[in-house]
Image (cartoon, rainbow, N blue to C red; front, top):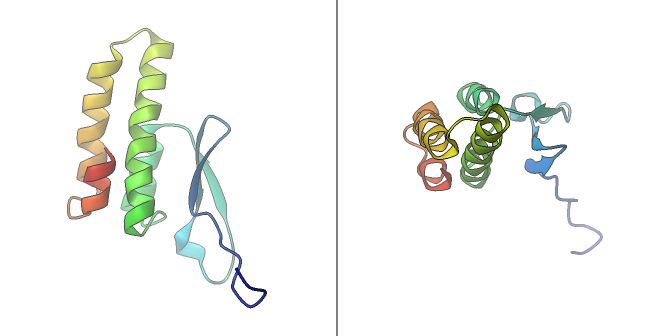
Length: 104
């Protein structure tokens, strides 16, 4: 990267036990980050277009399934069943997003 290249800004990453996203709805005016700790929160972020872009959607899908497994284990539920349910809901959040389906 040269001095003229822009500094890359991570749009989604794993932090504090959940997904930390750059809320795309506020760009380019400001950088706003949100911490999401459940599949439900990720689904809402995907539907509201807070998460956009094929790679970010794929990562969001994978993070959502991981969060579902963690939540199920914490609550003493079947993690496989929880992951399957979460995967279906996540993929349905934006049905035409190929990378989202791939990520889940």
